[in-house]
Image: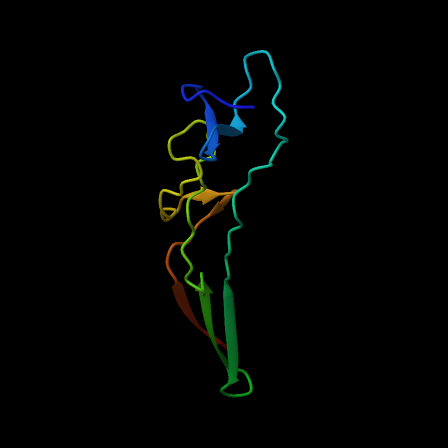
Amino acid sequence: MTVPANTPGAIAFPDGKSRIPVLVNPKPGQIGTLGNRSLDSFGTWFLDGNIQKSFRISESKTLSLRVDATNILNHPQPNVPNFTVGATQFGAITGALAKGQTIFGQATPVQRNFQGQVRLTF
């Protein structure tokens, strides 16, 4: 099956002789053959952690130190690829997620963040 060069909404694989369709939008009133979630984005990685140490100063007093870390690995989270069939940049990733932008319901920390805490219990 060949696809003419002016077919709207088609992504063709040029094999040198003819244009073989790779992805084609279905015609109005027809159902496409590509299943749901056949094209998916890559996963997101978030690694958060904390560490705490308590010191006994006297019998009734305790000093606790705690450090919380967000995005320990400091990996950038790329945007979701463009999966629009017929787009000129099909599959293109246009950059990284902005700070506070949500993906899959989670806010994305862009940079590594540390927060310290000191607690005196008496």
